[in-house]
Image 1 (cartoon, rainbow, N blue to C red):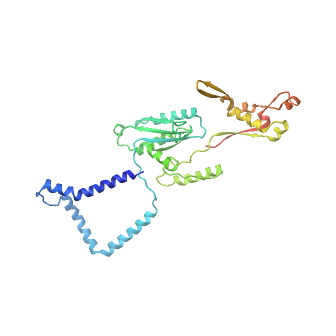
Image 2: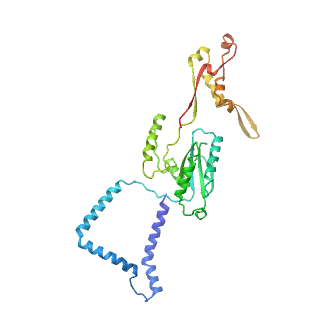
Image 3: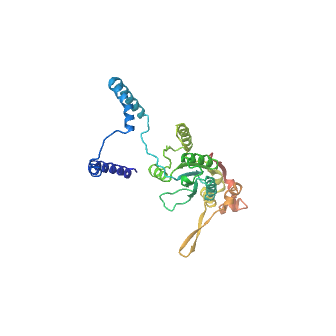
Length: 347
């Protein structure tokens, strides 16, 4: 990432070195001529007055100076072993990128409402010029995002137009962080646009530092992630320490009673197909509009799909022989053959 900048610096230093031994002496000789007088300015005289006593002391106490130097080098080496092994300078891009992560499974309409409230909160800051974000399916398949994730790009006005031009960008970000945390239903992470994209390309996450937990048990992984987050939050200088939200989505569990289905002569597959069609839908035909084709999907309306009592009354068709011999109706309710357990996972 820094190869072009490093090459530019090395080329500039190399060119300056060549000019300093070729063109510069010739230019000085031509432009200045013989009118050259060497004398010390006041700054150098003052520097020598401070430097001369220290030099004399060092020359008279060589062993002491050598011991102090060795001890300082050893202590510096020990301190270097406790420092981080990787460092990349954070360049100020000017604008701010705000990554908002919502509860998994949030619908697009609800995400738009939450996004509108978030943008209204950010626009209250007079330093902000504009803010925009995109949700849903991306135009480029290399960056797919669900509706519960939104990358907000906050365009900042020139600092000269701020009400307080002496205010630092870090102070502004802290104020925004305190304001957006009051907007419910979101987790936030402040970064910069280019920095966020590079982090995502390098490690797959938008943060500068990320800890990935792998396993098969979601509860164990969530508990481990919370413990790691608590440890990282205690490190001085750590900000925006959070665990990626993987829970909080209401779940409906339908447990089919196989003994009852066998007693009534109903296939478990038929029950599953009925539930799948009612909740997810099934293509029942094709609609043609010119050269375009659209599937006609049959499913329950949203009002009934979110109504627990309506789902319990979902009709399950009986076999013809069972319906004629034992029952007056050709259908049974879903609650007769299964148990519905709504579960709201903790956020």
